[in-house]
Amino acid sequence: MPVRFALFCLLNALLLSRGATADPAIFRDERLTVGAAAVIGEKSSQYYRDIVLATDASGRLQVVSAVARPLVMVDSVNATVIEGGATRSATLRIRGNKSVPCVSLEEAAVSRKDTVFTVVLAETLLPAGQPCIQVLAPFELDLPLDIGGLAPGRYQVLVNGRESSFQLTTGGSR
Image (cartoon, rainbow, N blue to C red; front, top):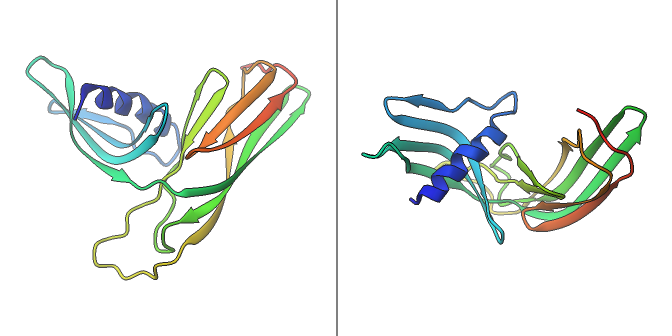
């Protein structure tokens, strides 16, 4: 796997490891183990679990293994912003479908570049041999966005390719 992917794994692992339930990345015996990471590209994104990187002869990290997770289908994304006084918050309401009812949502990977938030939302894998009815399973998720310190303006949100936007009228502080 390419070095670029390894770097994306490292950087995006930091995004995912901010959650209270995420396991920290571990470097031991010249191997870096990362629980989850998202690779966010201009045209598409991917989500991986159980990533193992190892150092090569020159000391650079190379991806040894990673398990891709399927992205969920997103039907709609609506942003709600509450501004008032010194506090403000933003929440995304995401509606869509999992591939089957027997899988769960993975922790969302959220990244921001300039005025664009990108959210990668995947589902767990169905264990081999586990029977599950083959029907779509609707979900609804409320996902808080960190808007602290952002300047007033229009912000775009992309969730698995589905777009939304919101407007901030006041500046934030950190």
